[in-house]
Image 1 (tube, rainbow over the protein chains, first blue to last red):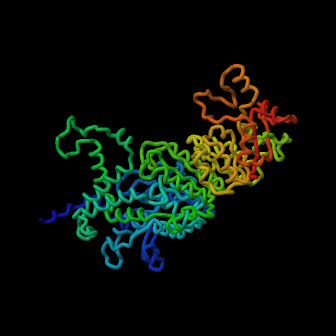
Image 2: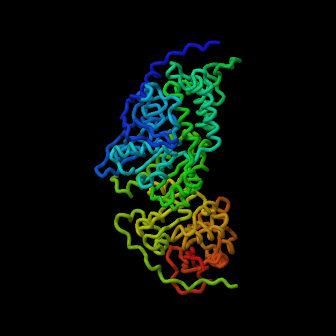
Image 3: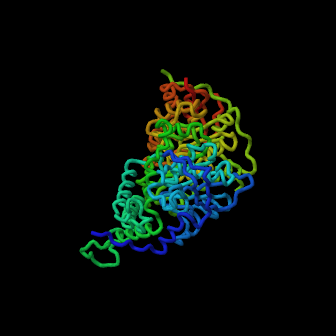
Length: 396
Length: 226
């Protein structure tokens, strides 16, 4: 059996691919003598972070907010995405008059190290070979992502951040920031996150990775050089993961058992049900914009995440003596990062004597709720941010 | 064993200054002002069952207090966050166990003990977490309650106890004298105690305890570990 000839990339996919080295955003380049010291032991250099900023840094450099993105997010938090043409992934939360008000704060959002939208990652060109890094790229951790962001923030001339905020994997970065650089974080808002990735979540990630690697077009990770793309594998990974971002009741409300543009089942494996059609669409569109190896690396980073690890397994010790104000949020229907995970963070922060607020937002939209229009989340976030800004002396 | 109250106190020592023109719109509750008068400036305070955060905001604005709260109702927590307060959505019956010993100067339980499932454990945690505990509660021994039950044969429904029996969150009502008994049981020292009348003012007359238990609509206690 011979492998089928690779399907040529769509314009969109070529566009996405071109972002890896030369993104349509700001880029901070770190030279050979500014290596990123990674947890795996590698000193990565040269390297770069793609980022966006919104708003204006004040004279005291006191109003900087770092937004951390989730697994498949990127630096385009509040601007139209240059590849997909869609609004920024958190434009409901970050913008003029939004909870993270860009008329008041200087907002930075960077693509994570290991990502594929212009920060150095497996899709970037390895300067030593001139070919894409692929699996030669060193394994990334959440702490590496945070170290990289800290170097970016420093290069932007900002000593300490007013606030670090993010959901899901973004929330993991928020917690790591607070643990690693407590002096540099005035306020921290981890949303729908946890201090360690659960066995169930590692399991889902492993299923996704195996789907990618089972695709013959993955080519042992060297698909970019061989002109192939593991479309099927990555799409299946995305379909599976997407289900975990929703909730049973949201799926039922949105799709039920309704059929897709037909009156009766076709007695085939066609996408009879609306939910099937929806998931297939989610898979296909994701493949266009996201690099498969990047998906492997970033999911792995989440799996390795456990803030307490570096503190003898005691989470409270990660935050001992902190002066950061925390606001932890979870969602009632989120079963991927359930409220109990947030409560564990809150308990540890209490035990460490930290200033912490916690609210569980009522929503049936599952884990994805943090990306959606959730008025209760916005109100709580705005209250927390405004209170912290007043304490820091940032004018309203 | 006879439960007895300490002698009635003079008005609390450091009552906050009078209201400025700016905050006359939201005039603080009288019992909140009384509690604020008990808390030393700059103290660390945990308000258990902090509601919409009005007491914590008062303590912050007038006493310069570093306050924290626990509140069970989601909308109240959101209201607290909007006031810039540090408040956790949680349950006094389960979540106090998470706090380390001596984490606060004062732990306040304002009009909440009657709604807890385990008042004794809650009080013990408060005395463990804080150097002092401040507890205020509606007095089920007030004469109007006794009239309602004793003469009318009905459970009381009034301003301090606004719920009907079938939808009340208040499952552990007690009298001032009952509460004194609990303090003795858990070994709490009663540093100060007040009975508040219907207007929220301390009953100033030097009366014996049974009269407090009859005339006080609320009991307010400042406790410490023995």
